[in-house]
Image (cartoon, rainbow, N blue to C red; front, top):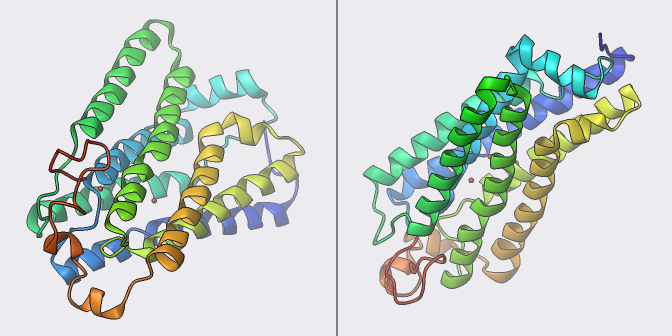
Length: 281
């Protein structure tokens, strides 16, 4: 069976992995705290939140299933070789559980705090419905054949797609408002750190095993790390270069969108005639 060749590299692997866990897990709290201080979720895109919940739920299913199921591990080794390590670590499972809980709590904040005229768009609702409908269809297909590795790979694909889609409404919303007030930059900086550490963790395992199977055997984790870096760099550019935040905006709540609800809160996923908007590790 697969085993580490170097104890030193295994230690570095664990350090990078748990470093990614703490960075990604902590990345949820700046937004939660910001919402609490402002008693408002204006500026936080609701589409981002809804898509993020689907993303993290799918990722939890994939990580937990492959980490705990001996049946799935056997199917993985049959496909990629018995000398390969399982590409899911304990920190991946811990992060997924935490992410689902914190995303759910942020959705609860949406229900109790000032949200202006924001709401979840029909586009986001439709994407979420299609994702879970596809998962159910794949479950029905996989069940008779015991194709469990294929099934959890579907959930991995869902989380990759959701990771790509979920950031877009927030990025467009920032552009429309010409502001990132209400969207925590602390979340982004920690998210970026977690993405880099996760990628380094995979690299360490590949070096130890002298194999790149780790990267394509868990292509979802590989793409997740890369997507996080790309979008976080975009948000950092928006926050610090395009729409630098003034202290008085934060003190007043920075709710330009409340002062001008017809414009800044337009849903980036719907035409300008519709009065909506929607929203992040």
